[in-house]
Length: 271
Image (tube, rainbow, N blue to C red):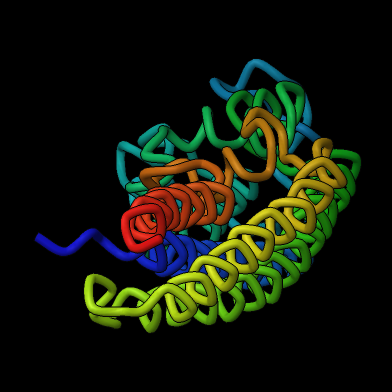
């Protein structure tokens, strides 16, 4: 049975990168729509849920029922401009194609995690959107957009690095296959010696790939979003290997070492 190509690790990494690109761009677009729509919602005096407050509903304020959003996204039966905001959040941020698979949480939990406890409480316990809460929501939304844009830029840079690693690995892999395609048992001593020298060069090329890759990893240890851990853990968590390039290089290097040792045994037998 043929050994699985180490390039499959890189292919898996490329798929993970493409999926994360799509997720981040979808979330950026969703938060931008939410911010745009939020700016159209009129703010006014706060009135707590249940009518316990004294503030009146402002004239011209949006009056919307959260019933249209659904029980998983909002508290059924609440009306007012805050209900409109909750509806907008559900129709944009929580309506991305991947939301249920990646997050799958109630609107209030997602608000707490994405923004903060205070904003989540305001949207849970008030019916009217206050100017202060509206400003804070817009600021938090801008921050969510900015953090995702920064992360998307890092994912794009990783895509470029992965493509470079793929080209280098593919070249090394092809060279190894070319050497092993020879009828080694029929080669004369000099041809075996040259093949061994070439395998040593390819081992050194693998070592060079590791030397290039490790600083790339260590240079972004702190590149994370809240709660997701290191960049590689975040990006490659669903892959078989958290460090696909290093894993692929290790597999290829081990194979080269194994084949070189076999070739050296052949060399010893023809002397």
